[in-house]
Amino acid sequence: MGYARYVAVGDSQTEGVGDPDGDGGWRGYADRLAEHLAGVGPDVRYANLAVRGRRAHQVRAEQLAAAVALRPDLVTVVAGMNDLIRPSFAADKVVASLADMFAALTATGACVATVTFPDLALLAPVLRPLRHRVLDLNAGIRTAAARHGVVVVDTFGYAVTTDPRLWNADRIHASPLGHARIAAAFADALGLPGSDGTWSRPLPGAHTPSVARTVAAELRWMTSFAGPWLYRRVRRRPSGDILPAKRPRLTAVTPPARGPA
Image 1 (cartoon, rainbow, N blue to C red):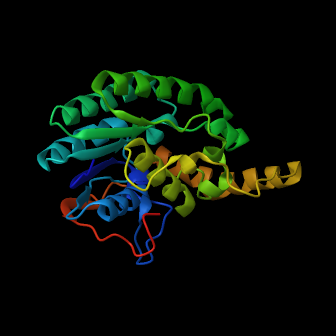
Image 2: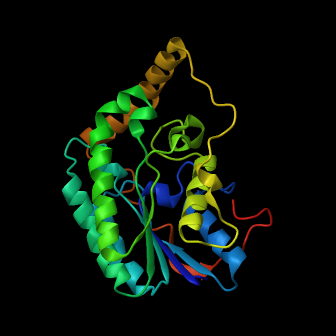
Image 3: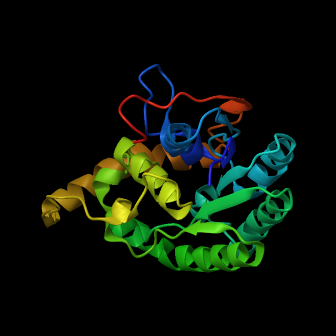
């Protein structure tokens, strides 16, 4: 099926943080998916309403009405990571916000797609306490998606999704390769021509680092990323406070010469 009007809603992952576009901005999985769509059918237009730092209820409050007004035939909804890593996390509240978006968007006749979260406990030892949160949130996402007929890209359980090479050094945003895999996973779940299940295959050359390297990496991460993030939270300064939507209007997409990835 071809899609001519694609709208992406979400937070920094959808904005594309971690995947530089070469012009001082971010590319990201949504841009890559839009390019894939443009390679499949003509006259594809794409809007990206995502703003970094947004929690699920903020995405619903700030982006849902605008998304509906754009009359999309395809919408990706990705939110919850900024909730997941906060002490006040409540899976039922996050799922309720996502379910509201699923209901409103599918009611317009659009195809809606979302994603579950990978097993963060396998990405870094310090993230192990988050595993039960991921399990609860994913279960809620699957249930809400099934209720509203939403396509789900289920990343949990695939070893490649916690390969450090798919993640930025901050371990919150995907790397360029990670964004490419997310876009490929959405394309596969949507059954787009030129897509398949290769996104889920392990990367070659995987290895287990030594204990010393692991400890050193954890210390670098704590001082370079976790510490500054906690400082911003204490001062209540979300990273996207003064930023506008990345691409608020539906505009034409040119498929890249090198292909969808």
